[in-house]
Amino acid sequence: MINNLLIIGCGLIGSSILRASSKNKIAKNIFVKEKSITNIKKLKKIKSKFKIVENFKNIISDMDLIIIATHLSEYEKIIGSINKKLSHKTILTDVGSSKENNYKIAKKKLKREISWISSHPISGSEVSGPEHGDANLFNDRWCILIKEKKTDKNKLKVLSKFWKKLGSKVVIMDAKKHDIIFSLTSHLPHLIAYNLIQTATEFEKRKRYNLLNFSAGGLRDFSRIAASNEIMWRDIFFSNKKNISQVIDLFIKNLKSFKRNIRANNNKVIIRKLKDAKKVRQKIIKLKQDINKPDFGRN
Amino acid sequence: MINNLLIIGCGLIGSSILRASSKNKIAKNIFVKEKSITNIKKLKKIKSKFKIVENFKNIISDMDLIIIATHLSEYEKIIGSINKKLSHKTILTDVGSSKENNYKIAKKKLKREISWISSHPISGSEVSGPEHGDANLFNDRWCILIKEKKTDKNKLKVLSKFWKKLGSKVVIMDAKKHDIIFSLTSHLPHLIAYNLIQTATEFEKRKRYNLLNFSAGGLRDFSRIAASNEIMWRDIFFSNKKNISQVIDLFIKNLKSFKRNIRANNNKVIIRKLKDAKKVRQKIIKLKQDINKPDFGRN
Image (cartoon, rainbow over the protein chains, first blue to last red):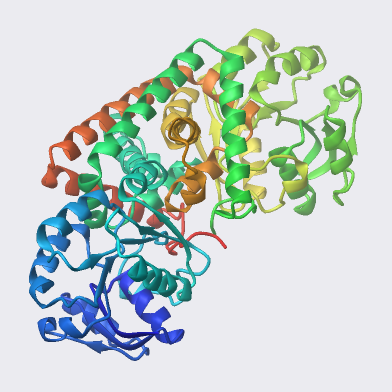
């Protein structure tokens, strides 16, 4: 059990950690630092036992675990402001979706002896804010923990135990591998969704047709993904831009080849491509990353 | 009420028309022509009153409404085989997702006096086959009817009434407009989903990482769309290739611009793009093309 836990930034993920830690009695004392007055009002409605702190510098040295659950672009400022008070015993983690860049920031801003061990729980939604938080959000979901050469193994064990108690399945990899994997499994899909919606908007203006009325044939599913929080996604796109650029290029290459093949009525190639994509779906279901239930649209 | 209805090709859509027509007593006699033995076995389990016909040429002249619900690539053969027997009274329609090309086929293959009035009910799923059919599939969904210069207005009225009785909201447009709209709202999203999955597969092989394990962050939603029937989608891509090529180009242009903007840390442009995409989501929900319920992944 963690003695003192501080969650900095308490939106969807932060408040889910709060609820799950309280529900499963994983932390004795839970402290929350949240800068948004709107969010503080929402947090006060949560029935879990925790304390909202205003000036958090006084308590930093007593914390066993500090979780930064803000947007990526706030890390530098936060780490700078708590750095001097951090004690050797504290595990400092975050929940961000991009990792290499954070390690650079941590290296630059953190006292040498402090353990920065980054976490990435794979859970989220197109909605944000503490009112959507859920004590079961991490149940049976992956949580990636980042292990670099200098990572303190004992502290990694403690952090791993913490996430497992929240319900997560923990997997360990380095920041570089993490950022490569998620550039494709998460960052590119979101970027594509945003750009498809933008393309639809432009096309609608140009043709003066009411496209959105007929979005049930595919477009609307992308619009849900494209409704995710814009600050969060700007930060991810900026901080993992090198890997993301590479997968954009690979994707464009495939799109162009597909276009050539449909223009040439290239039956064999197109059927193979479409069949192969279907097989991937079966793999994803086998891996329990989705369920095998047909979707006819949500009513 | 339709006296004699013939459904040619009885998969997801055909069997849904069958179930809905029977349930709502829209057709007195329902005939089904289905070439797949597997599908015929499945059809026999449906409790609606209908007759499976083997050699359908004998009954063609008595039909009031014939609905072709096969893959697009079978139209030419089917029209050719029923053409001689078709009577003046018959309304001939289909449910395909691409229209201009069909009109060319109909013009080439059909007797002059026969009314070819194309339909496109906007409903479907990643699954296919008669066992997934549903009498309520068309409830409150759009159905596009195609009106060209020579379309018989009385027959268009009859067909419109038929779809409304199945639960559809009917909207009328010409084939050209239909194909432009759906190239963006449906064909491009599916093509993108297929290509994203292909890109993931290539990337997985190249990097030797288990990407699919972490597909819950976005990729898995695309994999569902990419699991749709490959013959259906090959036919759509081939028959609407001109419009689809244009929207692919527009989409690639936007992707490249987005890439340049994230590489340049262009905060203002990226935030505007992401915010605009979010607004489109709100419009789609207002238009009742999706519901406003957060999605945390399906369990």
